Image (tube, rainbow, N blue to C red; front, side):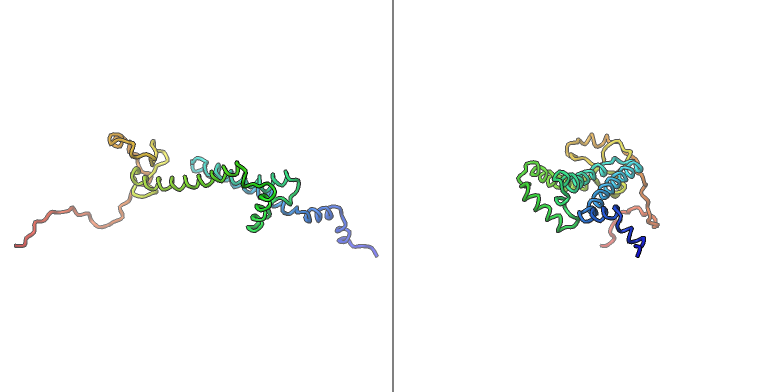
Length: 204
């Protein structure tokens, strides 16, 4: 009895090699490689958005750091170990398993470069926190607007906030050029404005 077309199709070398590729982790490799391409594409989108609104692409440049970590951990490290078994799987528990493996194989926590990296990440988070507090504390003082969105102008000649407002003299503050606001403040109160009057008490 002759075999059907589907039965012959299952016996082809392509399907055999594909099945073997999936059994040894080919789907993970496919997802990891295309995930790297997706992250790089999102970073390029951030470059495009920054250019369209005339902002400096610091957000896209910062996003290149996690991309480098993803590529090095999920692709370069297992290639260096000659096996995808050493690559971390996708998921929280799998990431912790891979961390334990790397610690067991390489004693990674005693690596001085890893120590400097951890100190750099924590130090950068600390600097970002105190920098944000400084910006919020000086934004309303130096800006001429009534709120956060009107307190800066992208074409202004001087910075919106200053890390050292106490270093300026009163003469420098008076000499600062007054930049026009992007959106003028609107007075939405329909009531007539009354001038304050000084009355003399009439009681005896």
